[in-house]
Length: 305
Ligand code: UDP
Ligand code: MG
Image 1 (cartoon, protein in one colour):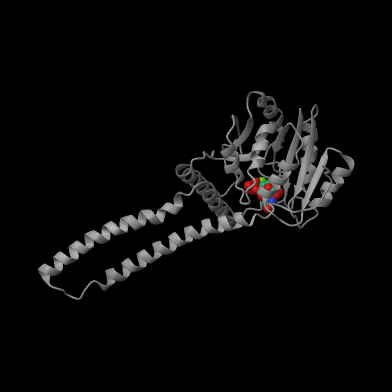
Image 2: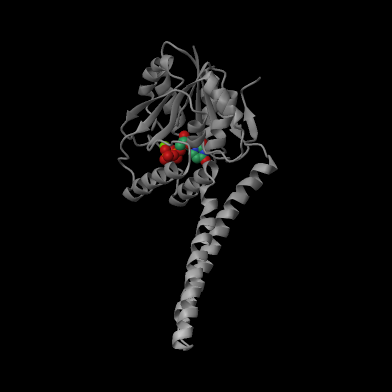
């Protein structure tokens, strides 16, 4: 069995060589290649990769022309992987290489061996809470099943990788794509590990945008929200009309109630704008998809086809 390890890297100059050493220690009796994808780092991550590639033929690198995001880096790695088995892994050692031998052993009976964090130790409490809310929400409104705490760290057979490569959409939400292709999956659980060097590239707003990305990519349910409110308010309006007609007939027409009118107008205006916002989000995704631009652009690489 030949294993390809796909490793997206963005500003990870210190982690790259530590990662390489760890893998060398872990995989002693296996044929493998490491595909580092340099996602437009602004530090000398690429130089570190080249240094390793000079001394170790198992090291391949693909360097993007700019930062395209982890999802694009994963796609590039999968596309260039030659292995019968492919492993996807972060370079910061938050995906423990020590799990790898067991994952490779287990793959015989499964198509995918995936990992999930059972703790979120070392992470801000609010972030963990919001993440949990996100998983509950998306699982309720979409058909795919996202596992809470699931990492991208996984070993897949060639068949699964080929299925993933067929999903060549521009807006890539990998966690959803992994779930979407299905296949028999074994989950391995482990405790959260903090990164060895550098720092996370995820800000709060980045994560929020990423979760909206996931929702828009995997369910159209939010589009029906405006229909729901439309029907609800039509019914309320109908009841109110009858109420006002009857009241006017009985009590004539006193000038009152401007405050409630303004409140209602603001409320409805808010809901209309919110609904238009949802429409806009889907329109944006359709627009970027229709343009059919490449998912990534290679600046340089040592992989020849
Ligand atoms: N990464 C990337 N492109 C980006 C951001 C991150 O390739 O634009 C890589 C990063 O180098 C790391 C992995 O994706 O190997 C996970 O990123 P990070 O550790 O920042 O995320 P976290 O583990 O905090 O979720
Ligand atoms: Mg990390």
